[in-house]
Length: 358
Ligand SMILES: Nc1ncnc2c1ncn2[C@@H]1O[C@H](COP(=O)(O)OP(=O)(O)OP(=O)(O)O)[C@@H](O)[C@H]1O
Ligand SMILES: [Mg+2]
Image 1: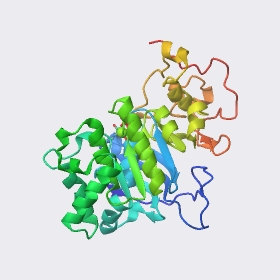
Image 2 (image 1 turned 120 degrees about the vertical axis):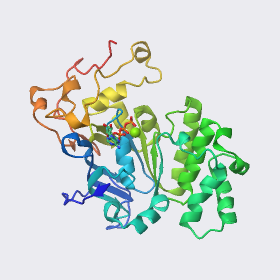
Image 3 (image 1 turned 90 degrees about the horizontal axis):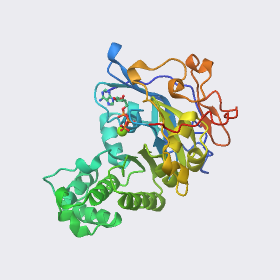
């Protein structure tokens, strides 16, 4: 991974969020400014993240939504410089005001786990099959604190209880646990070094709805009790609207809409946000059960992005100018922004119906 910092336009509040009251001059827990990530180079370059701004305060839950391939995991991995060496980054990732992209390795090691930790996508399969889960939770504690092995094992037991598992399950091997239990172990690992920020990349996607709800409530309770910041990534807008305070919707490597989570879900201002929201049936909405909505086509290949607004080839309300004019995020109501030329215009009746005929 190559990290190059660039001069970025100062943006006092890229999220447009009102912010929590705190001393003037105190930096937010996380502020991402104009982040770009490109895999490879030359003709094969893949611009996976293109100029993203984010802001998370302590105790705040930010959801990041978007279809497969829109850059969500790349963004998550970039936050702790966990990307492969083929990735080039620019911009700023300020954790408590300190730029992750320019940190020396020693400092970065300390910040991983203790500053911020990640529950990885597909985490259920990333536990080591031949080690007891308690030892796997104790490992970062031993590495990042002066704990003795006995104290680290005790702490691992406490963490398991915190995520709703008996401390005795520390003796189990991963294959002896259910999928939901393994995901709880992964969350216990993420909490091991008392991080200030947790990034959860699709933490519940592979779980059934009952376990999914339990894990989401668990994450919510942990965030509330410990005042940590949370970034939750999912393609499921409904889950994010239910769990998070704010929502950023990504398309083709960019944030195209952001705002209070429930408002974005219920009344998106960008046609992509509306399509994503309409893709999930609402409780009590029989029409959506009988005729599920969807968005025709696929997101663009990042290495061959269309000109103008990258969403225009799929957009049901695109204007001729959308094929040539790129759109930046603009104000779209209180605490809301959207990257669409039509933000200020009413949506023509029926023009935005993304009901799939397939
Ligand atoms: N190591 C890599 N090398 C080259 N390209 C990559 C690499 N990892 C991801 N990409 C590309 O970057 C783009 C964004 O991928 P990313 O995994 O961030 O998407 P995502 O939004 O997390 O998708 P999903 O919802 O499927 O997890 C995709 O086009 C993907 O093919
Ligand atoms: Mg992903």
